[in-house]
Amino acid sequence: MILSDVLLLSLVISSSSSSSSSARSPHLPIDIVVGLPHEEGDRGKNPFLLTLAKSKPVFDVALEDVYHYKILPRGALKVTFENSALSDAVGPQKMIEHYCNKTVDAIMGLPYVYALAPIARISKFWGRGVPVFTTTALVDELGDRNEFPLLTRMMGSYKSLGKLVTRIAERFEWQHYFFMFNDEVARGPRNKGRSECYFSLSAIKNLIMNNKTSTWNVKMFSEFEANREQYRILLSEASVMSNCKFLEF
Ligand SMILES: *[C@@H]1O[C@H](CO)[C@@H](O)[C@H](O)[C@H]1NC(C)=O
Ligand SMILES: *[C@@H]1O[C@H](CO)[C@@H](O)[C@H](O)[C@H]1NC(C)=O
Image (tube, rainbow, N blue to C red; front, side, top):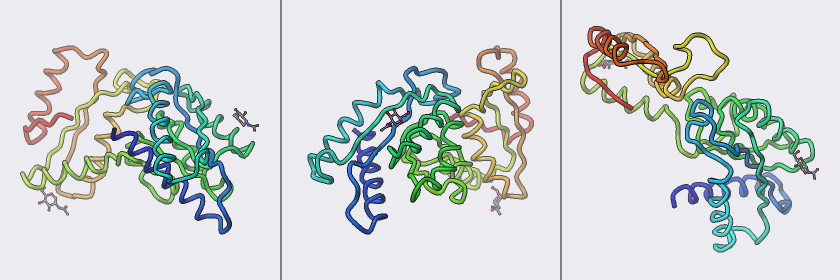
């Protein structure tokens, strides 16, 4: 079970980092606060549709392993689940409450990237710093070590995707890019975060920007609205503006 291995690994990392940060014996139990929503919500806010119900068994297995392999003594980890409600107000607020009453040594979850970002920014000021772990948040911008020093993204980031695409493009000497993607902004300004499609392509764009010989164009559509005719127009635009190769992610 890959996910449980990943979690197990991160639990070990978090425990070793908090134990090594104190010269004396570590204070146990280590408080891990997991912020996840009750409901899946929409993919805009929860791109991988994580929920408390889906994640709890994974934590159960990870904890069993930690104790079974005697990585830490039984009871050394205390996992508290909070409903982050996919809100950039509720999620951070729950974490801050735990900071205020001194019941957080590590934070996990917060799949809504706009809730994760502020916590990942400020957690370095909490005591000796509180590490933040996530299996989502692949957004390129969160890779900035100065801004998000204690954030660990266990599944990597879209930067790897960007590297892959630029390597392929170099190999075939493609220099004209056409980014065509789903984003609700296409339906006019709305009070919503950018789509996962936007974030993944933006990581590619951040890399090709370094190459003066590359050019790119951007067209957005809303997957809830676009019809066959609009796709036809977009694709024919793409075919004249780009190198006429179609990549789908
Ligand atoms: C700390 O805050 C959390 C979140 O509000 C709450 O659930 C918990 O009961 C509090 N713990 C203590 C010891 O006050
Ligand atoms: C820019 O892209 C071209 C074509 O893909 C490639 O040959 C060249 O090495 C790139 N230049 C830089 C500075 O990456």
